[in-house]
Structures are given as C-alpha cells and as structure tokens.
Amino acid sequence: MTGRVLRWTGLGVVAATVVLAVVLASRFGSDPGLVDSPLLGQPAPAFDLPGLDGTEGVALSQLRGDVVVVNFFASWCPECREEHDDLVATSESFADRDVTFVQIGYQEDAAESLAYLDEAGRSAATIYLADPGSRTAIAYGVFGIPETFFIDPQGEVVGKIIGEANALILGATIDAIIAGERPGQQITGDTQQAPDT
Amino acid sequence: MSERVRNGAFVAAMAVMAVALTLLVSTRPADVDRVEEIGSRIKCPVCQGESIANSPSPMAEDMMDLVSDRVAAGVSDQDIVDELLGSYTGAVLLDPPASGTTLVLWLAPMAALVLGVAVILWWQRHPGAGSEQAPLPVERSRTRLVIGGVILLFAFAGIVVVASNSLQDRPTAAAGAAALDGQDLSEVSNETMEAVVAANADDPQVNGMRLALAERYFDTGDYRSAFPHYLVVAEDPDATTAEAITALVRLGWMAFDGNGEVETATRLIDEALAIDPRSTVALYVRARVRWCGAGEVDEAIATFESLLADPGLDRETKTRIESDIELARDGGECP
Image 1 (cartoon, each protein chain N blue to C red):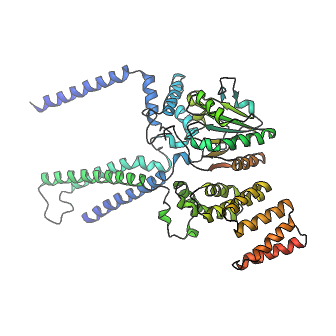
Image 2: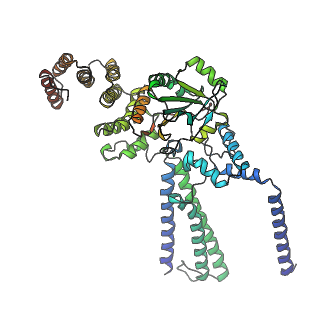
Image 3: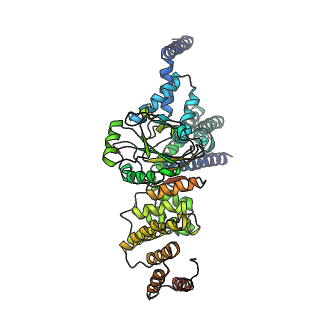
C-alpha cells in the first residue's frame, strides 16, 4: 500500500514535469520578433504624421484606394541602407500604378533621417514621414528595422517583410496585391532593434 | 510570557502591519502606480527580457509614454494591454497568458503545492510510511515527514527552473542545423525546416537545408514561399558556388515563369553564369527563357546542342534537351 502510493506520487511529479517541459519548449523555440504579425488581415492602424522636413505630412486615410507600402527605417540601420536604392527604384517604377511608398523614420531625430536621405538619395514618389513618440511604430508592432508593411487599396494589411527587401521581392509582393492576393509575411534577413545593436 | 499574551501581541502586530500597508497603498498616486504596474507587465520589444517600465531604451520610454497617456485618458488597464497585444501579439507580455498551452505554467506551482500538502497530510496520518523498519516515535516521524514534504516541493520547483533554463538556452527552433546533421531531410517537415533555417539565419551551413526547402516549394509551384529562401542564398557571400548558382537560376526562372520578367530573369541567370560560365543548368534555363520569352529560337537551339555535347550529361536531362530541340525546330510553342 505504502510503496504503491509513493510510486504514484513519483509518477505524478514526473508527468507534471514532462508536461511543463513540453509547454516551455513550445514557447522558447520561437523568436517573438518573427511570429506572424497580428495586423495581417486587419485594418491598417491609422496614422497622421508630419513630414520629416517639418512640412505637412499625410494621413493614411488620404491614401485609401492605393496600395500603400509602409517602410520603417533609420540611418543607423545597415540593412535599411542596403535596401534603400531598391525602395527608391521600386517606388518610382510603381508610381503610375496607384502604389504609394511611405517611409517612416524610426527611433532617431528627423534631422538625422533627413541628412541620411540627402546622402543616400530619395524618390520623388515616396512620402517621408517623422514618427514623434514612435506611436506609429508601436501601432504597427515594430520589433526592429527594416520592417515593411503592405496595405491593400481597401486599407487592410496584407503583407509584411521582416528584414532587407529588394526590388525583386518588393515588385513581386506589390504585383501580387494588385492581383488581389494576400502575400502574408516574409522573412528575408536580420533586423536592428536599436542603434547600438 | 503566557500563551494568551503572545497571541495578543501577534494579533496586534498583524493589525499594525495591515493598517500601515493600507495607508501606504492609499497615499501613493494611483495613476503613477497604474502606469508602472502596466509597464511592468509589458515586455520591451527591443530588449532582452526587460519590461518597458525597467528598460532605459528609447523605444521602452515611448511605450511608457503611450501607457501614461492612455491611463490619463481613462482607458482601462485591459484595454491598454489589448491595444499592445493587437500590434505585438502575446509576445509582448512578460507573463505568459493564463490560457491555452501556457495555462499549465500557471497551474504547475499550484499543482505542486497541492501535491506537497497532500503528501505531508498523508504521511502525517501514516507515520513511518515508506519505511520497512518499525515505525519511528510519532514526533520524530512527523518532523522527518514534514522535511520530506518540503524537500519534495523544492525538488519540483528545482526541476521547473532547470527545465526552463535549459530549454531557454537551447540552440533554438526545435533543433539547430547541427541537430539535423546526418538526418534524412526527406523525413523533416517543411515547418521544422523553416524553424531551423530561421533560427540559424546567419549560419552559411544552413544554406543546404534552405535550398532543400526552397526546392520543395519550387517543385510544387509555390514560388512565393520558395522566393525568400533562394534570395537569401543568392545574396549570401558565404554560399558555395553550387548553392549560389542554383539560387540565381531558380530566381531567374521564377521571375520569368511567375512574373513574365524576361530581362530580370536573364540578368539573374547571367549572374550565375558569371560565377560559372559552363554551368549546364544556367545555360539551359537561360536558353529556355530567351526562347520562351523573347522568341530567340535559333540561339536556344545552338545552346541546347552545345549542352548535348557534354558527355557527362545525365540521361533525363539529355532526353529533355533533345525534346526541346525537336520542338524548337518544328516551330512549336515553348513548353
């Protein structure tokens, strides 16, 4: 009787530990920054932001009817510098197809972002915005940059690229959205969380 | 001191502590408390395991400002948390949600407590249990049993901590690339391969698995899933020559077959040929793209025939090229 109870007690401890280990394994195996964005399939968070140069900016609602590509960038992010030329080229190549590129400065002064754009060049078809207090970055759940969101003409988030994009992947994603598809999330590489990482 | 006096002193001390605690809580600014309390539950998304209340990062400060504004605007705690969950998922919570698979993390300590108490009570009612020898004197037996129960509780807590730490320190993603070394990839699911390549994104040794995964997608016509993997390999300066050529040629074919972009496809395949001008697969696919996309039939036939001259060509490829040549000569449409 006594031995049996002790054995069952031991088995109960072992079973509970195994269950716990499975749960822990399932949680620690994933990078939170790489989970599917909860925004996919949802209305895009609204924003009404000033221009990087202090001029009147734009509200997302003004762009309804276009495919909107929202890219978060900063001068301190190497991957953002790598993808910059492709963003400029793709923005210009889709300018006459109801596609609007919006680039939003992330975690740096507008003056620094502007100096970087002066150095790297900018697209006449892209809207460059500041994000005071990171409110828009928070609303879009940005874990690191570059992150690029794709919003369809109805205002729904239908795509996201985590990491560096290029003209090929940007073009293919926009083409898919124009064709009525929902590209979803693509992970192309690393992101930077802060200037010193 | 009598037992009555001791009990009275104990009750008085507890009452004083309760009053002091009540005063302390009631005199602290409620809104500041709420901001800090909510901030302590939210994980800083750009930090490692820190709450936004404790992190000095500018992003955490911005998030605390947001929480503060929401509190000042009269938004409830749950609505504030829900707003952040709507952007970041449950990954933004420091404590796992008490629901779904993580519910067990909350129940485990209570289960351990109940189990420990049950064991102690049972042993108290059965002094000497578990011993083959004659029962010990009751007092001594009870002391040993209480100690045993406490040890059981601590053992369980220790197992929990060790399990969590060891799992957290694992190479991630169910298995690192090394863990799958030597394993037949045909037995590995796409999901597992995705997890491994994501967890080892910076390791060039994972390119082999990445390509194998991309090839699966490619073979089923799922270009969208294949695309980012080929792209990573094509842009990886540490990729082997063969890996880079495969990736560039596949990207080229997908650009043509998926998007009808003949020139982009040609440019990508030319990049592969710059690595190895005699690459059979690059030459073949380039000829197919130029034939099918730009109507360059004669050039395609010339390329196909030069490929047939390669004595190392396998039978299947040879048959396919011969079929293409026949079709091109007959003026048939590109297959």
